[in-house]
Amino acid sequence: MMKKNMGSADRIIRLIISAIFVALYFSGMVTGIVGTVLLVLAAVFTLTSVISFCPLYSIFGISTCPAKS
Image (cartoon, rainbow, N blue to C red; front, side, top):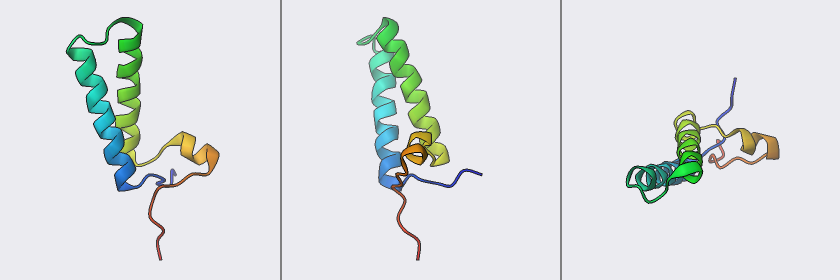
């Protein structure tokens, strides 16, 4: 089972960045390969925010979750 390794601030920032990427793509400001890459990144950021788990954080031993007493 995946242990949560993302705090609230991290999740909110990722969701905001995802929304910006999607807005850039659908407004036509970013197109082609770059647009597709941004959409994929937006999907990854959204998914990791929803499940509160980032695989890269676990590889590097990073956690932005507040410590539990």
